[in-house]
Length: 50
Picture 1 (cartoon, rainbow, N blue to C red):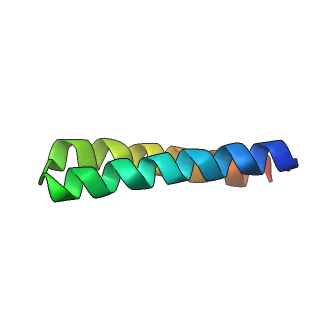
Picture 2: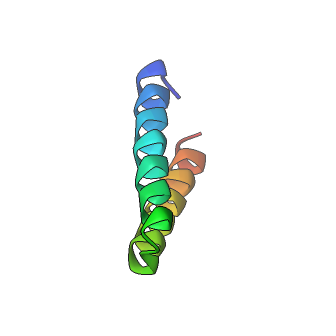
Picture 3: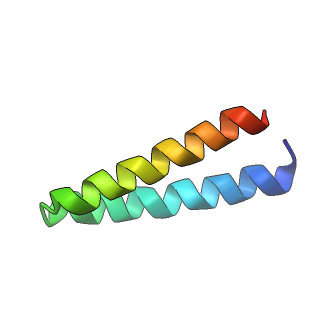
């Protein structure tokens, strides 16, 4: 996996982490589920590429 892909992955995870924190703070379970699915997709794509 290239440096670029890792940097992109890192930024995506950081953005999702912030959104997840906000959704927890606002008790928005729908948003939490959506973010969780996106994180799963990112992780799965990472392992497929590796």
